[in-house]
Amino acid sequence: MRNAGYTTPPLRLSLQGTRHHLINFIPKLSAASDQKRLRLYHTLLKVIAHKAVPDRPGRSEPRVTKRRPKAYPRLTKPRYELRHQLQTA
Image 1 (cartoon, helix red, strand yellow):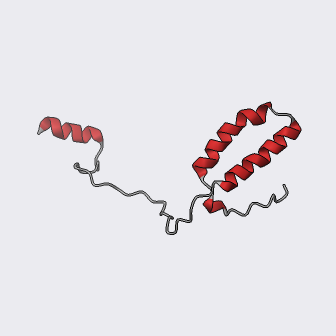
Image 2: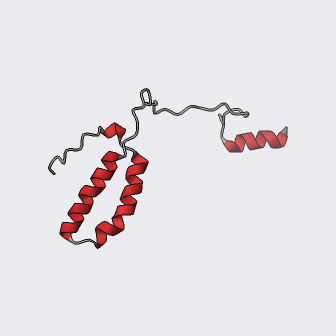
Image 3: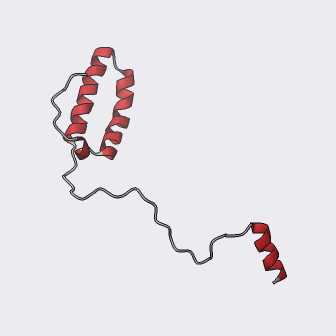
C-alpha cells in the first residue's frame, strides 16, 4: 500500500471515531464498484486522519488489576468443610 500522505500519528487517532466512520462506510463500500470502492476507501482514510484527538500527555495507564477489600475472609478450606462447621456451630 502506498503512503497517501497522512501525517497524523497513530496515537492521535480516535479509536471510537474510526469505528464510527467505518461502520458508516461499510454499506457504501460493499455496494460500490471496484473503482468507486477505492475512492471511498481513500475518503474514509482522510476522514479518519482528519478527526485527530488533541495531544493528551500522561494518558498511559498500567495494565494491572487491583484486589478490592472484601467484607468476608478468603475461602481457605473446601466448601463442604466450611458448611459442616456452620451447621455444627
